[in-house]
Picture (tube, rainbow over the protein chains, first blue to last red):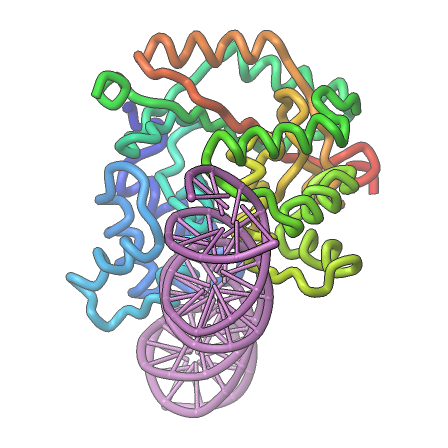
Length: 148
Length: 148
DNA sequence: ACTGCAAATGAGAATGAAAATCAATTCCAT
DNA sequence: ATGGAATTGATTTTCATTCTCATTTGCAGT
């Protein structure tokens, strides 16, 4: 999966910009959490990221990780999804894509489909809606789970 | 919005069939909850349906309503969605459709788009997945909220 | 109708993710 | 250096949902 907006520097710059533009402060914790987040390859929960952050920064609290991930979403550094009910999964913001989720093993495949995107705009236009975002989740069985 | 599979009799029959086919029991509570559910026009949470059920059947517990709605999903009488995180919304099973949700007022428009459906199958096939279901949620502002 | 027993119920406790509190700390413009 | 607003972390709270378990109930087989 190609990283569309993915360097360390870019993410940190995006954070810095968002913070200053909103009168918020650059803190040690936010930087540390961003570093840990950037090391995650796929999707992660706040809780799991907290575990991750803990390794290098045992003093950082869980609440801060929860808060900070929401901040990252606002700063367009991360995206939030809820594939299964009750848990929020975060991923790097890296250009739009949708998800195909295996109900057997939980594997997640990302994809893009231009025709679908066009149709979505079409639908929204027809209803007079101004579209902000969308979530398209396909659920099924991956090749391995299907044959097992 | 047309009811595709929507009569009272059909729903009750579907329930009866599901129950007997799975060695489960037909109970006063399940019938009562189904009756209340069928009176709901759009989407409802377990909690709100519990309030509804309570009116005529104060003896029915919340846990039973939660359990029963999950049963309805299995029996293909209801569908579950989680538009906002942390709450499950149920709607009548009435043929597939997707949702356009207004972030301003919470209005929900249902739609169908054949081209999108075809593309979904295409995507799944390309990845070797056997598709079970999907969820497509468009978020934006409805005409009223957009201009306000 | 009677019995046995698994399924179902209801009240309340437990869970778990996320949000809220709040006193103490830390950024940062001046 | 200073003041005040933003931030933090420990903790509590919230709130939807699930679990527990003693009791009840539907129902298949007598």
